[in-house]
Length: 68
Image (cartoon, rainbow, N blue to C red; front, side, top):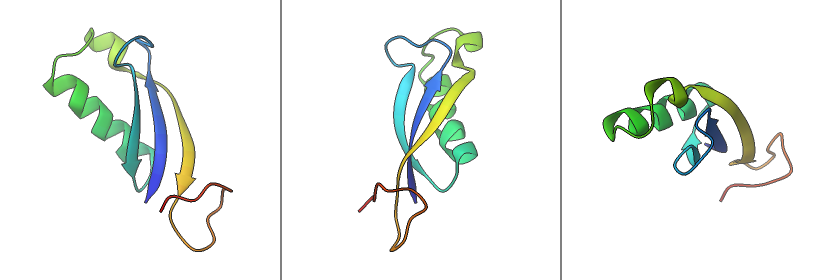
């Protein structure tokens, strides 16, 4: 598993989330589903702005931050 910072276009309150997922696509889908189900922001503002990999599980992760 990996820890991602997912940012949507709304950029304000509730427009950013930390998501644990296998890959960036799954991370965005999880966050978008949350926004849609809770009717947060306008639909056009829920579009993806950026995803950043913050940490990764595993003995030898590709990045220097370990998710435990």
